Image 1 (spheres, chains in turn purple, blue):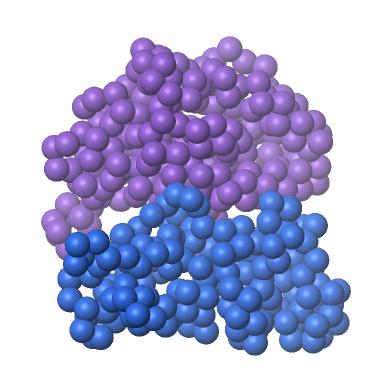
Image 2 (cartoon, rainbow over the protein chains, first blue to last red):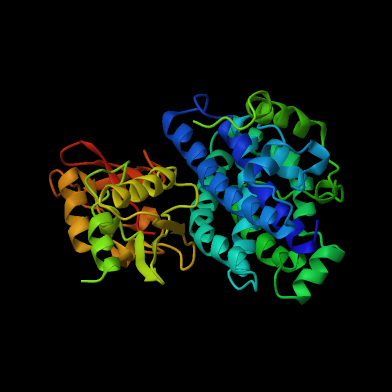
Length: 249
Length: 158
């Protein structure tokens, strides 16, 4: 797969895998409004994923469409970051993941609006408005839970501590991003970190939470080295398509 | 009237499947109808990236065009420039209000939803409260009215 296709796949897989995870909350969120909110966020991400995977398939030029890429790849062929594939855990852990990831994704899409790749800039221009809502939603819940009861504070802090090390991978650069940054197509992930630190740090402080101090930073998602969780998730996500190839509804 | 103009009149009336009070023209997602060397193209811009209505809308546009005698019309989706509620017609906003959904205000584009003052579409009171920013469809948020106590949807400025 060429550089541009691989890059579109990374962005698309982040959105697709997180959409699937958030969709798992359908009918089991703590309240009805959250059922709607989490699945609406999933829907936005799924829409982004569809456009990005379609684009990756076109750039690759081997006739694969969005469904081929979503349903017929194994876990080792997925290029998403590890943070999005993590099991939902409790509601606090899902919210912590949303806060860390959507803050990153908003900064990313904001810069991607100027990409030399017209499809990427088009997807980003639309998605940046959607992700602003996602980040807002995560921020409000982080504040409510962090600065809430003793129990909600403890669980929100646990959730942030648990998710925090996984965020580092989002800002990793490699030879591929360097080549595409030089062509004006990609955003340098390292450049997103200061604004991310500033926003997330501000929310944690306002929520009376402690910013975790850790050097542990698992990585490998962009190379297809995933946690065990992804394979199980894909088994559920892909089973219908694999059992009934080409089925539509 | 050119063929493209006639086709535009025909497909402009296609309703939105989720809010059937509005047409795709009212919503501002019908961006262009053009003819080039005898080939007709209808350009649509989806509201939200994941809007599930866009596939049925695409089918309805093609079906409506075919029903009116326009064969082989191509329907294309264009993401750029991104759709905004600023493209919704005044007529569309009136229809939304009459349908019971508080329409978006252009001044609210880019404002946090918690700071937007939304009037209740039933009683007109401005004593309203945001319940959740995500409603029955991606483009709506749920509010409740402090005056008549009824819940209602608001089409978010976007």
